[in-house]
Amino acid sequence: MKIGCSSHSFREFFERRELDLLSYVELAVELGLDAVEVLTSHFPSVSTRFLRELEESLTGGPVEISAISPSNNFGHPDAAERDRQCDDLVGWMHVAGDLGVDILRTFTGRVDGNVDAGDAKRWVHACYEKVVPEAERLGVTLAIENHGNLLNSAEELLELVWHFASSSLQLNPDPTNFLPGHFEKPESERGPIYDSLAKVARFTVHSHLKVRDFDDEGVPTNVDVPRLLAIYRKACFDGVISLEYPGGGDAHEVIRKSVAYLRGVLEE
Image (cartoon, rainbow, N blue to C red; front, side):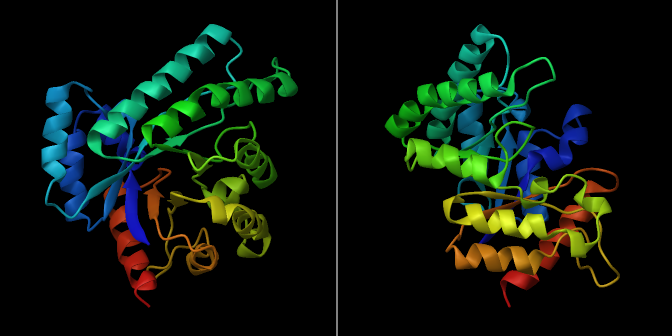
């Protein structure tokens, strides 16, 4: 497995223009990462000129782009907006192809209290019906993350994957998202994290790992990382574990400590 990091971890630095995509790649090298996951909102441009510049910054270096990550919401109540988001996702498939990236992290979406959950689930299926054939044609894999409040349980994700039965629709689990409020729960109550991951791990092509707190020996305290990695290994997953810092402290220090810890565990 390789160690990556989502640009979401440094969102505050992007927002303050203290970091851009090219300097983020440089930072990733300094942090000892193997890969970066890039949110589409962190692309300043998708012009041919910029994409070539980005590609050149990666060529010959130790870091690759593991995934491009749109923030689609297929639970949006407006049909025209859902169509726009489908078109947007297809557009990012083309960008991924230009950069040689074969994974797009996607969402199902979220709904508010005014939307019927059954309708929203049908909308999600309809949207993926539109975009999965394009992903197949372009050779891109859409990796759904369990994010939001719509079709994000292990069982619902498996239902989606089985329904489409396509190698172009797989999963990007964020294990701790399976247990809302996991930071505040003791390890003895975190069983749903590991049980849910075990159900979906064989469809995983890219993965998130939220880390925030460490003990005095530099071991993350919010989740049992070796237990997660054992589940992935059993499922023969050998892709990128993309770190996602949730905030609340020093992003650089947390990612640096996370990389050091993960590197040690992976090399055992």
